[in-house]
Image 1 (cartoon, rainbow, N blue to C red):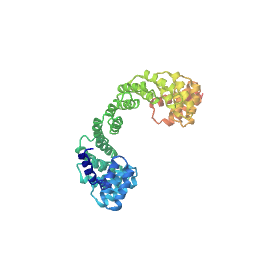
Image 2 (image 1 turned 30 degrees about the vertical axis):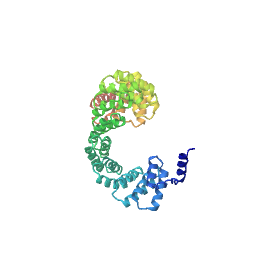
Image 3 (image 1 turned 60 degrees about the vertical axis):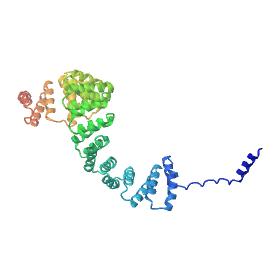
Image 4 (image 1 turned 180 degrees about the vertical axis):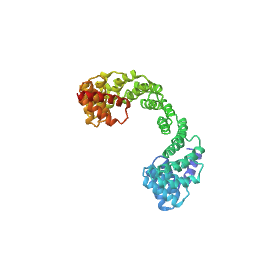
Amino acid sequence: MTPAILFLLAALAQQPKAQTPAPPARDPMSEAMKDLDAGKPQQAIATLREVLAQNPDNFAVWFNLGIAYGMAGDDVEAETSFRKVLSLEPKLYEAQLNLAQLLLRKKKYSEAVEFLTQAAEQKPQEVRPQLMLGKALLATGKPAEAEARFKALTALDSKQAEAFLLLSRALGAQEKWAEAAVPLVTYTGLNPSDTAAQMELAQTLEKAKKPAEAAAVYRRFPKDPAAMERAGVLELDAGNAKQSVMELELAVQANPTPALRFALATALLRSGDVEKATEVAGALVAQQPGNLETRLFYGRLLRDQKKYAPAVEQFSAATKLKPDSLDAWNELTGMLVLLKNYPAALETIEKCKQLGGETAAYYWFRAIMLDALHQNKPALESYQRFLEMSHEKSPDEEFKARQRVRILTRIVNR
């Protein structure tokens, strides 16, 4: 080893050793913020509590503690923290919003209104406090005040879709249905994929007494049987029977429910296609053999086409389904009379009487049947009872009855 190297080593050995640098001072707030950013609220809560022990009136620490508790799902402590912030800094906008959001979630709407009103007054051009305030007002049963907020908000931001939706609901809560439809149209234009809102629009238009417009909205959903049913029913109510038939046929093809078939048969009947209406009604009876109204509907269609014997089958089945149905017994009696099956008709008409059907019509039909069967005395009595009850309500029948009374009186008194 050369003298030069030995000298260097000796020199190095005599130099003082480097000291380890002191660790930086701890920054608890920075630690807490990192934990919050990392999604570790419990660690952040512990650190912030340490800071509060040294500085209990630091509103920034209380604010971050409220955020941490909110992330941890502890709404009670979060609310306490934000209330503390506002006791220290009453006009802190962010604390007002965060506390209000908690209150809304806990359905403390009236309390939320107080803080949201303050926040909205501080920043009238901000969307969030105005929107939240409108929701709170609507939830507290103040739709007119909510309406004013949502109108201001739609003027502030014409693309704020939710504001248009909520404005419609605020108007609807006041039963201003025609007005409510207008912002809902705007909302569905901004969110055309929101099917539920389009259905809401159709229902709103119905309530606004605009059936044609409502039907047009329902027609946007040709694969939805319920929507097509409503469209068909509305067209039917509006007198557009043929259009109604088209829509209801689509609905029945997709989902042949009894309700849809009944609506289609009704539409066909009103459109003048009685034969096809009867066909659909027949399918409906096969689908619902135990339904009284279905039987009566089908029977009446058969009756109107003078298919009396098949009509008798339906009305007879109806009387068995509901033996106390006066309608069913009246219809059955009428068919038996037209078929001139008087003995059977006399039995059924007595059933009508037992069910409260002792009317002038009862005595008229009883009289003409007994007359046809040459039972003169009871026929005469029934004609006389009919005339006593009719009181010029049926002039043609009364004229015939008086003629038969004169003739039968002579016959009976021979």
